[in-house]
Image (cartoon, rainbow, N blue to C red):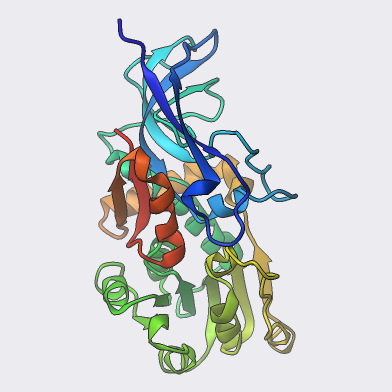
Length: 335
């Protein structure tokens, strides 16, 4: 029998500024056999997320950094091809932290069975995965939108933004998106139901915010930070809520992170800004999955995936997140 070969990308150096291929090493090794309690998973799809840039940095964060020489961390969906764990059997499809590799051996603790008959497998890395969970709990638990309020979402067609905007509409709010490019803005309005979308690539977004949010902003779901966060802070209403989900505009800085210059607007408007890490809601993922699955079945919620083929393209495909090239949730198809 031919021995399976595992293709892997490992972290070779801590990036300075923008990530480059040289920050990773590509290696091949025989696939290890699962031991007692373990399963062998063939990776089918990998989730590429802005948070991966932070995981490459040394220092304290909400999750330990990826160490030099370690397989690059990534969530994924795959098929169990061998099991010595009673919870799984060959042929099961699972999602979990598989890493940037073609095969993964896991103790099964973070693996969750998924059903391709209920939804296409990529959806489990988007609306039914971490992005969907992030949008659901970030908007509903922290943003606490009320019918009739104005909700602004940056990176409106990205993995989290596309879901957050649709949930805002489901909850009876006015949804205003911010995205890069006319095509993305048009898609946000036509497909995701945003009432309007501001193209930040056309220039400063202040005029667009004034036009789209004449009465101000009640909830801002922030995925980008930087100048866009500053601009929205000038438009917030009394008792506004700002959800700090991410700051993709700052992740590749070689200078200190740009904090909000207009933070005194929080004081003047008695507003609240709160950060979120989706893992804090792990005990309630099932609740969110059931609700969003129902919304999907009712035609109220849809998702868009940007799928790129080939594990070997990983470094270059990851860069699409930081250049704004991806259109929808970025996923790497491995097999």
